[in-house]
Structures are given as structure tokens and as C-alpha cells.
Amino acid sequence: MKIGVLALQGAFEEHIKKLHELGVEAYEIRQLRDLNERPDGLIIPGGESTVMSKLLDDLGMRSKVLEYTTDGVPVFGTCAGLILMSKETGDPRCTGLGLIDCTAKRNAYGRQLGSFDTVEEFGNFGKIPMLFIRAPYISRAGDGVDVLATVNKKIVAARQGNFLVTAFHPELTDDLSVHKYFIDMIKA
Ligand code: GLN
Image 1 (tube, helix red, strand yellow):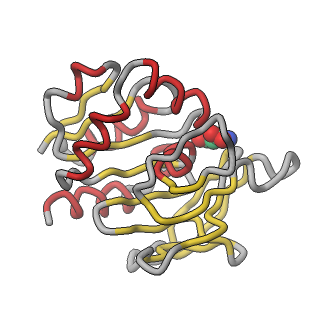
Image 2 (cartoon, protein in one colour):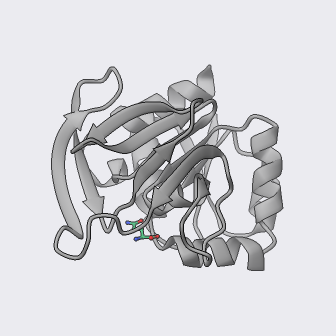
Image 3 (cartoon, protein in one colour):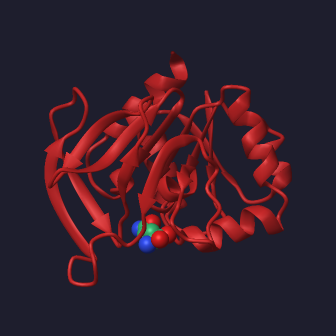
């Protein structure tokens, strides 16, 4: 199994480290030709969603990513990645890939709560640490969306078919649950 991590900007190295910890091969996707290696799964990291959206277009990568997703390649997005994978991003500078039928609310916790951490249930894994950095939450989830975690009644992790999103950063804590969950999605 080989997972590609979108490395245009943001926290991609930390995802690669986590995958290596789990014994999974991972590589950086920096340009269109890196996608030709045809990853078994794709991670869209945290960073700045408006910048990543623009780079996906400028580098001609958006349609290739969408082609893979229609072929069934699983995708996991954290934070800015969640925003990019949503149907509605609430920001004209960020065009959602529409992989998850949901609306993302960017920078949803205001300035004072720009960053915080907590411990909450994630799916069937029990409580895990969750670190939020200028994070979004999901303000609307369509019928086909499974909610995997909520914090203060706001959706912060969800899955629809082959697509997984978290508003928090599992690559920046010691916990491996979310990456394990994604690897299991690819294996299935
Ligand atoms: N606030 C960023 C955005 O809107 C996301 C922050 C993050 O990925 N840590 O894209």
C-alpha cells in the first residue's frame, strides 16, 4: 500500500511520519506527475484552504484528483483538507472538491479559540486527543454523511463512503487511531 500526501503547502510531513510509524509507504505529491504514481489513498493536510485550492487549479491537479476519487481512491482530509473536500466551503476563494455532502465553516471558533485541544470520542475508538488550529467545523451534513465525532455539538469528524475528514489534526498528537482508521478504509 502506498499513500500520497498532497504537499503543496501545510502540515504534510507530519502525516508522512505518522504513516511511516504505522509501517505504510507514503510519498509527497507536489505536482501533477506525482499523481501518475497512482496512490492507493490520498491525504489532504491542514494548511490554508484558499491557497491549496488555488494551487490545485494553477498546477492543473484538481481534475486528476477528482478522476481518482471517481475511481474509488479513498481520501482523508484534515482541517484545511476538510474544507477542500466539502461541497460548500462558504468562501469563494476556496472551491470545494464536493467529496463530502457537507458545508464547512472556516475559522469557526473565532480568534480567542483559534487553537485548543480536547479529548473526545472518535467513532468506535473511544476518546482520543483532538488538536484544533484555526479549525473549521461542519455546519451542515447531508443524509449520506456518517458523523464520527462532535465537540460541543459541532461535527468535527465525518465519513461519506471512501472519504474521511477531521477538523482537528491527528498528525500532530501521539494518537494513531485516525490514521489507522483511514488505512483500514483503504484495505477494505
Ligand atoms: N484556517 C485554515 C483554512 O481556512 C485551516 C487551518 C488548518 O488547516 N489548521 O484553510
